[in-house]
Length: 251
Image (cartoon, rainbow, N blue to C red; front, side, top):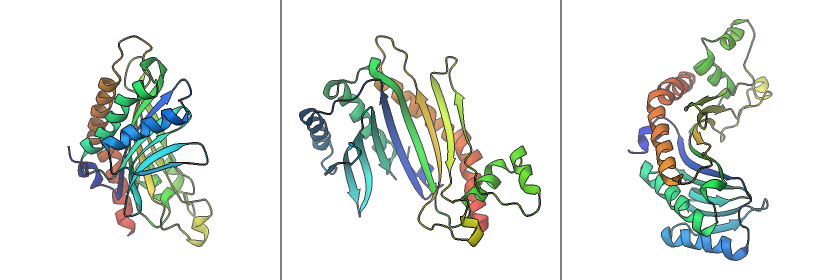
């Protein structure tokens, strides 16, 4: 499926994978370098390697000064990201490469995985009150929306989120969340940041069962299918399109 099936609804699309581990990840020089060198051999265009002040190690690919793919290694978390991929397979390919490498190069077994996420993040450029847009688009007909019917009211903080269980044992979950970059003080002088977008996040998370034979790759691929289906059926029509419409009406 083409990434622009989702990307056409927003100004920026990010497809991320995150693996949270129970134990701390290896931090030895030889192990860390061997892991990233192996990734670089498979992806020569990823040629920017750095260690952040936080201790995080990052290998990334930049395009015109903007990073478009990256893999980061933190104390107990591995994050793989792809910005505005041409196809969904382009993003998933890097995710799968990392999942195939971490058992052998970082010692991450199925028993060690605490949680595994696939996340779609969508950015919407808008110079104005992000909180008002979110409230109107997502809460207008709810009890929260009724608060705005009073005269001289203005939304100054509105970032709703929800987590739902997708399985009977709640080990498979979905989360949708919004993020406003407006502050409570912006509306007073109509001073809004121009570079920071309003964001919508949708993630499918799995807490693996601690049992032998758990297939990490197969489980992750299932999460991707679930996430894509829910994006089409729920997130695009009920979250993304209302947000886009509310923004369009203000421009």
